[in-house]
Length: 248
Ligand code: NAI
Image (cartoon, rainbow, N blue to C red):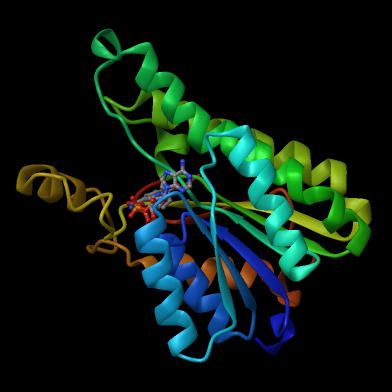
């Protein structure tokens, strides 16, 4: 995958979990990294590990739920690297509850980070990408945005929204050499899912034909593919990485 060698890639939520694995996979293919996260301590630790391993990586503390933070962060990234060629909108959270018990604050927070955050950071970095006439945007959605999940109306609405966002944006920017795709991961082993109970784990596993949880690397490899020249004729697509948990 030498065709992304030297490409500048920004990953949000890169300090841990799937975002970190995406950054690793892109770096292994030669990309230069802009690592963005709201958790400054973890971000600096992760960046130090990348640079110690010989990867060109710089940290940017960005809170995707804040317009000011995104504006300042995008400016800092562009001042540092001049452009962003691969943007991975990965930062995301859950605040689960049944609909009747869900607080509006938890609805707003999840939509604000998972959906509005992706919109705002894309908007901030798109002008430079359009000028570059080459770009890859990969949005990390979820199987829950495809199939729904009791207790997650906020999360599934944010992820389903991201799929619509992906398709509309793909149409807007296709003529400028930019592809926009989404990945819908299934049940992936990360700190986000480590909080599930034994019972939730067992019942979730029973729904996966391939019989195992996915790894962050399973998702990261799909991102690398969509960022590569091999995927240059694919846009507006949602790639399921879910072990067969949901089939369209
Ligand atoms: P995680 O909780 O392990 O990592 C998320 C990262 O995003 C953390 O480093 C966190 O500090 C950062 N983050 C959170 N809020 C932020 C904000 N406002 N601004 C900037 N950074 C922020 O989560 P995980 O599992 O790695 O998830 C990554 C993405 O994959 C999320 O969008 C999630 O919805 C999605 N996903 C995860 C699945 C799973 O099974 N773990 C399944 C399907 C989708």
